Length: 174
Image (cartoon, rainbow, N blue to C red; front, side, top):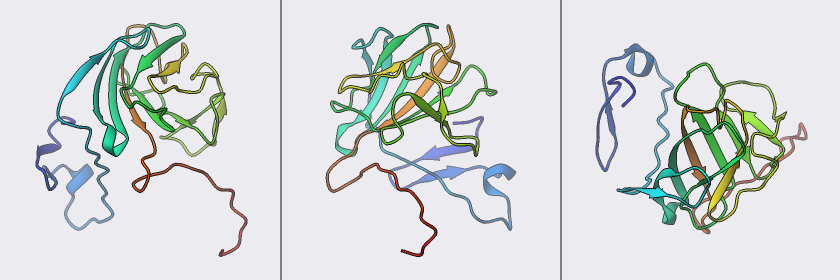
């Protein structure tokens, strides 16, 4: 609930308090990104790190929480297919980057959701592509520092519903 900012949820939306960061009078441009991740959380022991997963296979989305072990590891995601987009956040420290894996960028680089620079060459995904059961993390604060708590948002394509890709800009209006 992010310190009371979200005050309630329902099947049609969310309610927020008067916090100036999300509901300031006279300001526009707010957006809420919301995905349905199912109704129950289950323990997943498919990886070398046990995770807790809340998953909606039909929408190709899973919220995964786990505690880092500080060495190369795998983490179960419960999607049943390989995720093509993963965003991780170290919940024990707000000072670390949001780590981004995207299938089009590859497994030897990672993006930083909270910064404007491009993908960096750092093997936080162990240079290993996610499988239908797990994704891989190395010993980096964006995905797997020892004893730190993490959340990972995992998306997989669903035919007729979602897909993930990339493009290279060409400066034209096409």
